[in-house]
Amino acid sequence: MSDHVKKWDKASKSFDKFTGGDKRRYGKFKRELFAKASGKIMLVAAGTGQDFILFPPGLDITAIDFSPKMLEKARERAALYNGSLKVAQADVQQLEYPEQTFDTVVTSCTFCSVPDPVKGFMEIHRVLKPDGKLLMFEHVRPQNFLLGLMMDISTTVAKRFGPEINRRTGENVRKAGFKLTREFNIYLDMVKLYEAVPV
Image (cartoon, rainbow, N blue to C red):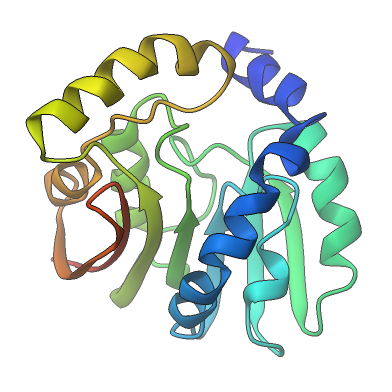
């Protein structure tokens, strides 16, 4: 087991406690974004499954995470979903799904935790159908110089226990072969919604 997986297994013990406020603060935005998901859907980085309730009922969702301990909690919530919601241990950097498997891929505060984000986005590109869509709710490095510098400094500590909060996610998506069709600031330019399509 890698150190990265061990870190997130350990974080699973207090994950709900520390992220509960995000659900209250950003749940409305996530719900609106997730409502755009259709067809065969993959949710990347399910965590403990807090976001499952924000999806419309009746969807076909495969929720993945590389942390076994996170998935133990996620399975309990998956059983309550009104639709098809399968939970699987998988690493977005090396997916075992065939090319063009999914119609929609959804991420929710995911790419602050992927060791090689461009590689992860390239794998998403591979498993998405040519007319598929990528829907993302992410916290990212702000463009403002002072805020960006603050995030860079904070990340040196934060990444030891959890996410890297200074990722340039918009750039990484484009590097992996996607076209951004929407970029919406929720909080300053640190919490964003992205929508993208493969090109």
